[in-house]
Image (tube, rainbow, N blue to C red; front, side, top):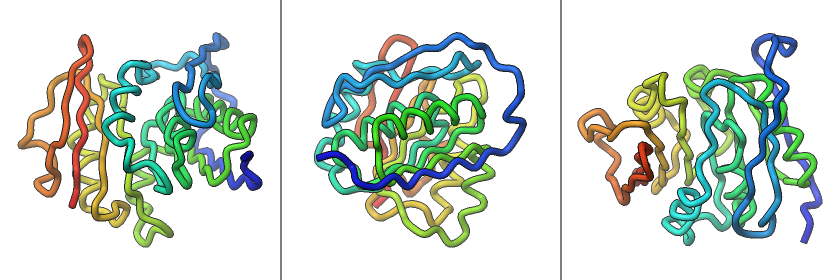
Length: 208
């Protein structure tokens, strides 16, 4: 059944006219109602969509937790993780991506694929989390895949853990260019799964 409503918001922060490369890329949705759909995204420094095999592993890990859940896709990039979740039955997805070109591409893909209950926020992730003092909803699934060079994982995870954004229980997926130090992660999170794919380490945490 096709979605009957589209509730997308695009709230840019920054210059929408700043120069970006014109080369376009695409990534494929691998499961669910939108399987084989392509998401177009621009060439942006640090934008590195989660590989198909990694996404397949992730969604095997959380296959029983996606249906009917609200998902938060931070450092959304191409939007592949959030759209994959929606394709597999998520109730709604909030995307947060600071790059205006990337956020604009997510909005275009959401509209083209008739994805309902999608919200796109073009804003710095830490700034957005800090603004959510009394959030309208809490999230049972969070995807966190920042540019590896920025070393933001520990900071953002602690900020999330101290916010009101996470349901209990909540599952948090984290992707990193280096192995994560358990001592740098929130004490309230327990690691459920971990794996490596080449130079990329990825983890699934649980906040109960």
